[in-house]
Image (tube, rainbow, N blue to C red):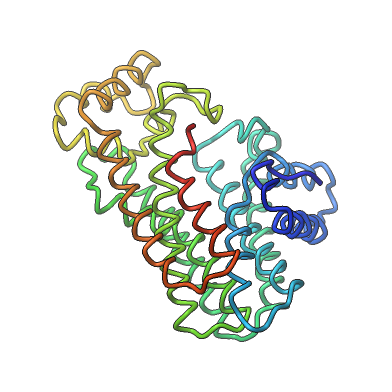
Length: 326
């Protein structure tokens, strides 16, 4: 199958990602073929496959080169990501994702819950089969726990106009960054690197994931609302406040209150006013600085890795996180 064109520049990695997607398809088997097709649509809907890509790239640093294992670990982590997306859509009551109807919208929330749970079991099945040790599985399990804690943090903080940047960072460190960290860590460790080396890869992945999520939140406030086909500030209507809004809220909370108090009853005019306030109060610029901070941390840690072609690709990908809107 054809994956995102961003990988055309890296044909070897592109081939491994295509094989990883084939492995995902092979392991997702449901008797109801319509539901199976809807689940698989997630993997075919234009996602960049960044998490499995990082896992595959970091798997090249160890002495035990096992392409089959590397692909299996990468596939497990992408399946875990798919499961969290399905559950996100349930919580957000999202009708569409990447231009495709969500499972909860097409069938029901009950079906979506079971589909997400099913993907968790597929993830564990692959990890149990290919992981080199029980300790490795335990680390992956703790990582999954942190991901779910991040989701719970987000739910707890909904519509909280006093949310702090620290709370936001804690939330996204679990919700998003943890999976990037796991991808880098597991890829390295399963290839036979030392625990110390794998731990440094974990920190790199965490910094990358933090920058990725902050930039994603910045893009929600882009002047071009159709960059990713997202409704303008739909997250704000859902009570999910991200870095640009939080920075602006900290300056003049009273300016936002009349609009944010409406919660999910905000009109399009309300969201446009909030959008403009965030721009006027420097929320985007402050969030950009925050994203650059984490990208700089990641690049600094990357300098400690051995000089390999994979290192060069990782650096290129990480730098691209700050220019995804170009």
